[in-house]
Length: 174
Image (tube, rainbow, N blue to C red; front, side):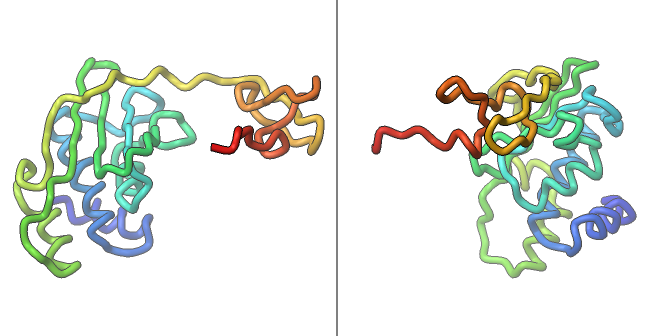
């Protein structure tokens, strides 16, 4: 385990916790098994299936971020991270395994960081394809509030271009 990198992740996240350790370890395993380098654009993609603490470590270690479009949030709630290397056409999916024993917070964190990779994670091929590269959309200004939104997030309502906030949700009551 790279102690210096762990300390940087803790500093970025704000505190040590088992959740941060999950993302840290998943990222370290992906880097090691796939020979990854820090992603300066979209050459590396991470699909995270949770929005928990570990995502902070993924960003710091891999360079995958929401802003660059190479960190994609797929809301399944699973402690799963899928990494794709576009250049090498390589990928890996890491899913946290169930903990067998009761552990304190500190014991759980140590277990995640120190046990063999295949004891902590199921390591497999992804069950979905690499996402497309991020697309840049034109900005459309809402005719109600005046705020700009990308064109794919604009709705037409009574011939007016409205942002999602102003358009409201449509429901038939069930």
